[in-house]
Image (cartoon, rainbow, N blue to C red):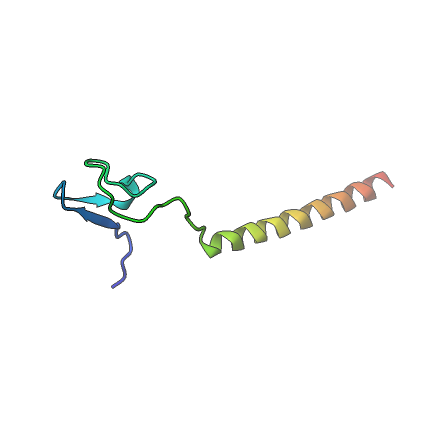
Length: 77
């Protein structure tokens, strides 16, 4: 079984509760007691498939722009 929909949580001993990773401060501190729980989230990476979509969109829009310029050229001349 995969971990689809699983949340990442960290246990805080001071607060005696699970803290969602998304609720941590940018420095990795607990929102309740300000105790350090995890590494800083300042340097987050973008998934590789995001860049695949960006490249595909740039290629597609570039091609459509070239087609538009050619079409305008045909209509004028």
